[in-house]
Image 1 (cartoon, helix red, strand yellow):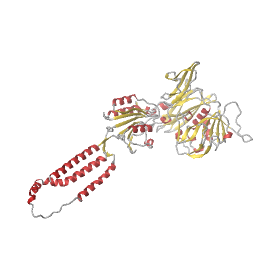
Image 2 (cartoon, helix red, strand yellow; image 1 turned 180 degrees about the vertical axis):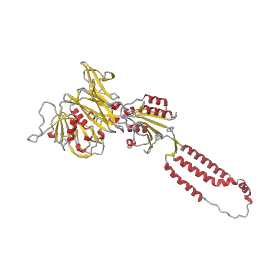
Image 3 (spheres, helix red, strand yellow; image 1 turned 120 degrees about the horizontal axis):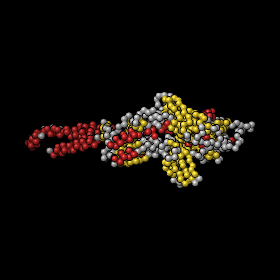
Image 4 (cartoon, helix red, strand yellow; image 1 turned 90 degrees about the vertical axis):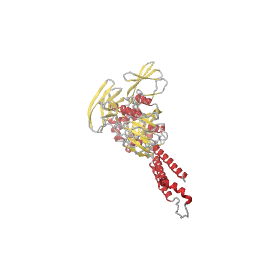
Length: 609
């Protein structure tokens, strides 16, 4: 048993005040009189009813004390814990993210939480309301203040995994907006929600988090990239062991025609390893696969083969040694541009479109053509200003191709140059409102601008460092034969050929999924991670453009977290039971009854005088 408003106990101070009133009430003194002849009848009545008079003398005080005591207890809102749900309005939030597909025996996490949510609904009464929210990237309200409990049960049965990363903060805010006057509670069915993820929320309702506390056996493919290297292809694969013991794994690389490479290795507990695989035959796309475990979705990852205009990247200026090392690990050949006798950079004189990485060089000495700008000089066309300390962690767009397989959020950056004029470039990584990485076109050539010094970050220590550089180079030599990388149910912009008569999204095996409306510029990609293709039937024949739907980076990590509860003050408890039977109505009714008895005692005392 507990109380919801313990501050109401301050009203106990009124009890000593009541006692003081009784101590200081008017007192009568004994006075001698000459005769009681006129009072004999009254004395006789008093003698026959003496027990009542004696009781009446103190019972009013006792009744008033009891009334105060019970009304104060009612104000503290006492409650009893229980397995039943007593709230007037119950909001259920269902996590349909990819990690909910992790198996535990024969059932997945999602099947388990669906059954638990249905059991919760079965406990509700006909006078209780239920709302149902699916926690996708943009939360979906499936039922609002529903009293038809069989319909809620049906919606739970029909719910499927969306494979998107759950937006739990917005889902909880939506849930709290549905609850009026704090008369409800929120039940979240998920796998690894932690209190730290909710610390910025303004908690106004009781919240119960039903986590799936199970151990899992999981190796995860976190990054995969490929790049042409002469007549062959080089690949970079990052594998993470998310278990507490050493694991042996078998990695397979496949092309369009099947398996082309296989290797076996070991990973220590919680170890992450990046492998470089050279001499792969040329294919349009590649698939990396691990052995099956409890989480199948992160055992397969896809890469589209980019096409470059040149096989060499030219380094200009004071290039950080980590950059050259990362490019070499990605099988990208580099050539350092030297200065001539006049102190000017001797750029290659050929008919090819060259790709450059320019570090700490004045803008008027930049080469023409596609380039990556690192450590820009003060001034120049982008109006670069002095470095500024960054106060916020880095944020990026999950759909940005350059950032695929690079977890920018985990990268530390202490300071960055301020950019006064982006010249039409689009910032793709920000710290708060400050852009730190941008892409676009400058002087009719693609450009990627890194507005910071690599020495001010831990970027080179991350396995995604060479991949981010490689992706940037691939962007500079943009390949129009593929549509790129997307996350589940993300919007994809499509530029169809003017001669297209029919367009279909299909699997690589040619199975139709859904048609594309010809005058429609955008469509949603499939929700299940895999490789697909856009099939255009034109007047000149069929054209195929592949694209990849891959897991969000957040869905490549699984963990086990215990269930807990949050009260309206945001205080956490290690229990997942917040159901309360409030007893204040009972105490208020008893106080009202005592007040009626007190009035009756007082009335009888007045009438008997």
